[in-house]
Image 1 (tube, rainbow, N blue to C red):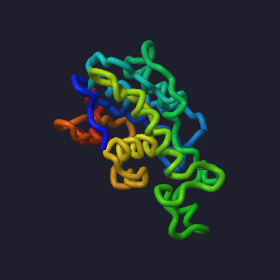
Image 2: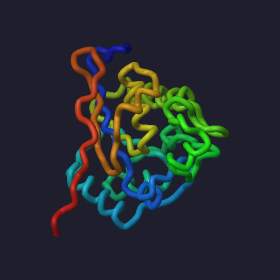
Image 3: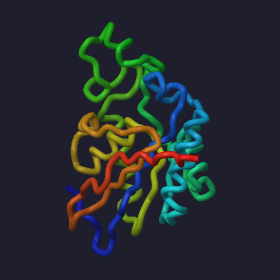
Length: 201
């Protein structure tokens, strides 16, 4: 387990993008570049109100529209750095399919164990997550990361020193925020999967 450098306490805020048409129907959305639904835009606005213009030392976003749009609507588009390592899992031949559709041919399939034919393996996604962690490891203060469900779950698993497939245990809703940090020298999950509710009005 890597330790925090003396004098530094990096904290990662993980922000999953808002609702899309494909998240509504459970279709695996990897590299297909679709935007938010109107509700997804409202969810991003709720994130903005929850963060109340919190100042982050650094902000990173996946270049895919649904994440970068969430980042912009949450108020951080002007300072965000695009990072291709934050793109969602490449689902290859399973892109756009639901889990029940995939399991008609692959009954025991899970992305966490099998990856996707023509796409990425769990280990490949884990290596991308490791590169993201390495980029923020020496940072003081808080870093915000706007990205995607499966990628962020794998990143959290790697933060804890677990295999990327352990992300299967970490459910993550759209437009949610989670916080990774330290307890003394130990990497921990400090907060997980808080969904920011829309205003009543």
